[in-house]
Each structure stands twice: as C-alpha cells, then as structure tokens.
Length: 263
Ligand SMILES: Nc1nc2c(c(=O)[nH]1)N[C@H]1C(S)=C(S)[C@@H](COP(=O)(O)O)O[C@H]1N2
Ligand SMILES: [Mo]
Image (tube, rainbow, N blue to C red):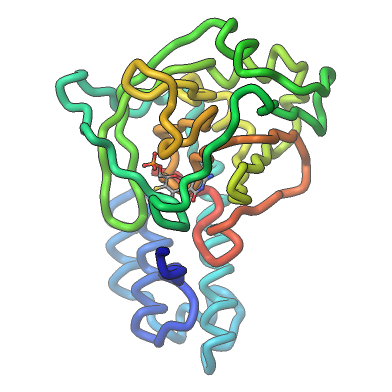
C-alpha cells in the first residue's frame, strides 16, 4: 500500500508559499522580462496585496495560493492555443516499461471487466447512452507518440492510440459551447477539463498503449490522453463522461493542484 501523499501546496511556510506563488505566476507569463520581474520582486506583502488575503496564518497562505492558482487557470485558459500541437517523438524514444502512477500502489491496480464495462455519456449531449469497448474500437483510430509529464518530477514518452476526442464529442452531439467535461473513473479518481482542450486535435480517448490494448496499469479500458496537460489531468479507467457548465473539480485539483494543469 502506498501512503497517501499530500500535494505540494497545503500546510507550508511563508518562504515555500512565496516560492509556490512565484512558480504559479511565472509559468504562464510569456514575456521573460515581466516574469523575471515578478519572480524577483514578489514579497509576502505583495502576495497579500495581490490576493487580498492576509498571510498571517496557514489558512491565509492557502487562501492566497488558491487565488494565485485560480488567476493562473484564467491566464492558461486565455493563452491556450487550440491549434498549437505538443511535440511528438520517434518511436525509438518510447519508454519501455512506461512508468505507472496512481494515488495507490501497483498492488491495487483496478481490473476492469470488458464484458460488463460501459462508458456512460451524460450531461449536455444529444445522445446520452452507454458505449461498449467494441463500439469505441469501431470508430476511426489515430495514434500519437508524446511526452507524459507528472508533477511528481518524472516524464516519459509513450505511444497512445484511440479515438480523437473531438470526433467522439461530435458523435454524441455534445454542446461544445459548454465549459467543462468531467470524468469519473473505476478507481473513484475524477478530474475535469476545459472545452478548448477537449477539442484539441491531440486529445485522444485512448484505447491502446504501444500498439496493444491498454494494460490495466495504464488505465484499461480507456483513458483520456492529452499531451497539452500534466499527468493528473489524464484520467485512466474512465467509466463516465459528462458535459457541464459547472466545474467538476478533480481528485488532486480539489487538494490544491492547479485546475487547468497545462504542461
Ligand atoms: N483513474 C486514475 N487516473 C489517473 C490517476 C489515478 O490515480 N487514477 N493518476 C494520474 C496521475 S498523477 C498520473 S501521473 C497518470 C499516470 O499514468 P500512467 O500510470 O499511465 O503513467 O495517471 C493519472 N490518471
Ligand atoms: Mo502525476
């Protein structure tokens, strides 16, 4: 059994709070001079002015960091370019074996039964129904060799194949003017993404890894693969997808990880 890991944000001291705020602010500010300026000059007083939160106790620090993170979500949303492709790599660079990660250890990997599994699609869609794996396999397939980046400090290149998510959303008649797509997984993990990322050409409803059906550890029967987002935004073992205008949050996001989670 893996010990539950606390995410990087909560319960931290003033210096760490400043470092985190600088990191969150700096990541998505494009002009290097402005970014360097903010990172050099942000003080605790500045952080408290910027966020309107008093930094006198842990609760205040957390409130301030949440505001910075929410600001960062908006900036990432504004600057996300729906046509810009993430880098792709030659097959010779695929990591074998590919790292496994989940909020539990390898001994607790979920074994989903293909025969009884269905993908439930609900919310703001014309065709609310349950899909079998065979039906997903019958749709047009595409693959990508891209880099998966985990906030825990590792990254690895893998090859995922499956249905372009924008094709799937069109097929179910999703309201693409809605703001969010939520995902519920067989291991009770959950996450959600913004519509522009859902429609990005490299966002895949992935059914395979390295040319073979997704093994249980990588999320059998389906995962959402997005090379434009960090690892925790890529749900494995998906059971339900819903289109909504209410932000569904996520397992790690609700504990302080940045919601947009762009890479
Ligand atoms: N269902 C589910 N999906 C999940 C997770 C999880 O615990 N459960 N962990 C996330 C995190 S933090 C990472 S880094 C990737 C790991 O995917 P991999 O095992 O294919 O490397 O899955 C993401 N999706
Ligand atoms: Mo991760």
